[in-house]
Image (tube, rainbow, N blue to C red):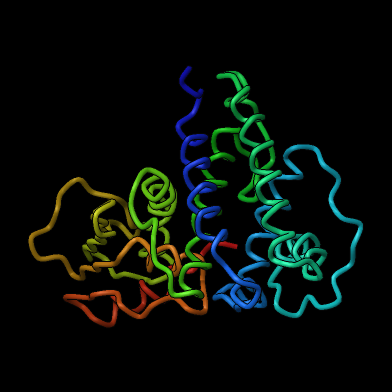
Length: 264
């Protein structure tokens, strides 16, 4: 029977992709630093475990992290509890817990109904529905998979439906980034091509940036970026590749690239 939301399929796909990657790691690789400040490969996995275990109703660790200096806000500090708690564990122990939690979580999600999807729930982005929470889980999980892959130099899972859902979520914020954060001038047109996934055009009219269906032949600036780099930039990752192709107004293009890091 088909699942009530494609997002559940995309979560399973990403959990499986990550499982296959983690299965081949040695202890040194588990402890490799990533572009998430203060987090190793193991810490990224611990974060995913902690969130999905809480969604299952499992009690969160009664633990106080020793160091919160790399966190930026209350959400980051809260995330650190489950991460720091598992730092004394081996990679093999974390992988066993990952497999247990994700299998249980998938079984829970498979029982979800259409009414469940529309239920209002708190999310890290504010009030939303269970469906919006699932989309947030897809983009967060895929982002952390990519954090791990960049750190280890093992690229993969750079296309497919989980990537498309993640990029689709981030794209909706581009007018705000172009118009407010990058201060694109009146009359500017911006094309952003997330290669192989989504290409959008944005125009600034009456002081506001908005999507337009018109694809300008000669935009003020055009950006061409891979899905992996786009995800690293919107997540504000320290190791985001410097490989965005900019054509047209280079200064505006660099302002837009610099403003992409909006995720908490």
